[in-house]
Length: 329
Length: 267
Image (cartoon, rainbow over all chains, first blue to last red; front, side, top):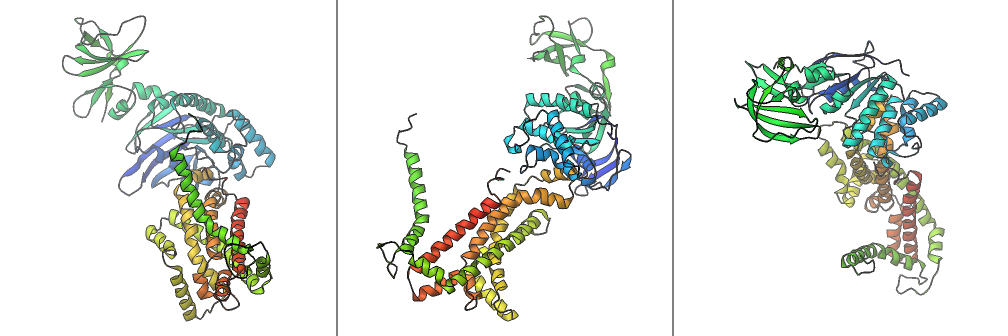
């Protein structure tokens, strides 16, 4: 449907608000056309600032922003031709749903008939046909979210920017919108940059993820790479649960709880005792205190009618050395 | 729960509200009674109903000239104070001005000074500057005390303004000028108009400042009424008051109908 999706390149981009603390520090990114790319990190890590620099809301102190091969570092916001969905939706409260969606088309001075046609199609795509004449204040959060999506995509932007767009929704609606957004993105073929602090959301939706911390990129990779092969202690710790073992100096090794196997004691492995057991439905999370004093999390899938292990039960832990990842920093 | 049960809290609530409304509206009711009472002096109780005081008011050239001048001045003040007040509010809320707080207090200060002092000060300045007492000088004086009302109401709206809405317009392709007219202005309009209504009424009812700045034969309605009362105290005064009240209410209703205050209350 849309064949004009654009690549995005951030070339050594930096930004500081007070001249001392770097909000974004030497960030280089290459986002492919049509890619679902997430910027993931805790609040204050610079992910939103990075997104706002792509949009043009924030100026760039150093570095270049290149979209579709064109350097847009100095292009004002309204000439960047991007779609954006805000966390607060930022709908125009004084305009109807249809007028909200038509806004970008009107700014492009398209013929009236085409605007009507495209607004209709965009609202149909987000399943809001029949809501044309409502005002945003009369819609639920999920519906406002869809209007925001329709408004941002109806202009057929080569790039769609999303700043925690699902953050204000409750859990169930959020999961549903994750599927819908992902589907819409593939359908439109648009390059999507998605800012979130929710690692599950990033893992579920993204083609690739950049994990950010303190204004810098810690690691860029596919969700599987980020999860299975974290490069730094920060990434390992931020994404999911992990057992960290300090090594020499600043190095460390780590293993995911589900990669650890609980066996009977006496057959080798690391001996220890079950400390706590959290039954979580599909799996049980055990905390095991090894005889050498280390605490290790183990995730055991609940299959068959395996009973939950008793507190204090002696066990031996083992794992495939290939599952142990080496971390730096 | 029975709806008929006597509820002391509820009864107290209505009694208090009734007392407040009575306190606020009783003077108007009394003026209305005097306006139709045929006795040649203001007296109570009324002895009948007549429209002669309204006739006297509307057929008097002095009253009509004054009413017309007051209306013209009030409309000019309405427009000027909305323009100045809204511009000021935008600059103070958005402009990153150094000392914005001090400036806000400065712009609000005409409200804190007794208007009679402001009138006297303006009179002396105009005299020193050799301006005399032209109508535009009177309009300026009224605008001075009317702007704070618009400033206050507009600042309140701007304080709750989600600037992401303007950013959304920008990324959709709206230039800064278009953003202002398509988004910012419509969203602050309820605040500006609400302030403008106050501005109109402040000007239309303005007495102390006008007292210093009008010329004989070029007086506004409140000044004419004051002078009239010094010699005559008949129903024409009450009739004029009724006309003033009706005029003020009409402007409020007209603005509400034309521009709409309720439509955007939920921002």
